[in-house]
Length: 310
Image 1: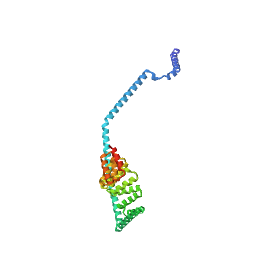
Image 2 (image 1 turned 45 degrees about the horizontal axis):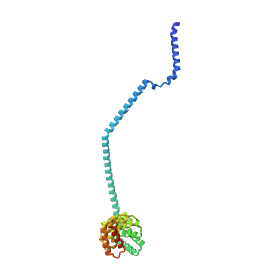
Image 3 (image 1 turned 90 degrees about the vertical axis):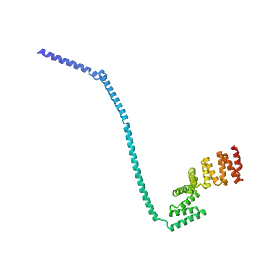
Image 4 (image 1 turned 60 degrees about the horizontal axis):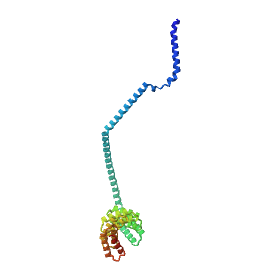
């Protein structure tokens, strides 16, 4: 019986010994870094290699998709452009229909208004009366009264060209250049080929020191009517102000061609010919000026400058 217990006791003692050893070594076991074990390191390296292979494969697939999708993008863009063009056409058609409808509406209203305020013999008589009074006031230099007369005409006929022309001229004489410009611009909408309105618009622009605008208006005026020397002369002076001597020379020459005996035009032509270095034209202008105005006190000075040209 005793001998049967001995093996059991030995087993218990061994287990107790093992437990004692484990308890003593437990702190060391818990602090052990499994990552430092060779097998674990190999497994980690293998895992990293597999991940790298995976991402390289994904990158290759991405590049292939980018190349393969190129034609599809072109098709998509072409489809978008066609759709946008179609929408633009529809929008243009809609706007055109809307504009036509609005134009018909305005036309209908204008016709109704015209029926209501159609000029009568009495109205036309009053217009003539106001215009006549305006001219009388202008002759007496009563510009404020003339202004009021023209305004009365426009109350009766809001598109009366003569009233706008007279009112604009009054504003020019009163040096109300901004108002004069507005009047002549509106007048040109009513009568685009009105060279007098263009000429006076140029004068109003000069009054506001808008020389480029003035030159453009005068250029249009001489295109419509090229028979007035004074307009070419004024245009030449404008180009002098703008420091464009070649253009000034061209216009002074045209002015003197229209009125060859005008000493003022010849004087300016001679001056600009010397400035531009055109000796032949300068000599010709000098001879013509000497012939029409031999007492001109500037002739000796001009002769001296001509000699200096060589």
